[in-house]
Image (cartoon, rainbow, N blue to C red; front, side):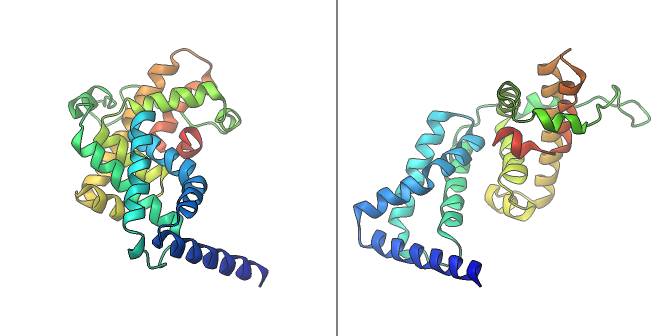
Length: 225
């Protein structure tokens, strides 16, 4: 009962905030930016890989949201609505600026033997790595490797594994088929695994296991969040 009352109170507060925004209340706009800005910036940063572009995307998000606030019907949480706008803004930026050629992916994908097996042994994912995922240096390495992926693949990886969108939602956002999303996600995981192994080199076996983390996608949200 208490939880229900809290949720009901939050919905009421959101409705009141939306009404003030529709009336052009400047203080309400500042409250909106203060409450949601940092989270939206993190989302934009993950999708775009650039602090400057992410900041621009968030500004565009709030501008678009403010203009379209009268269309917000309360069918979803305000935070969810803003998140969708941010993702759409970032995807438009990615479509207008293909910065990383997709043919580079071929060099990052694993090699296979004639019988279909891995040409190089695949590292196992060890549970001991979980103790290190929040290490600042390690997180920085993973972010750099994610940023090195071609945009078409990195955006799918981020939307599916970090932002939590399902395959159908990603397909709609990108204007491609669900099967194409699955293929890009698979190739992005493989390429990220290659990049992580190259970046970590001969460092400790525990850290080297992160190469397999890229391919499995496990714990990626914690590593790039």
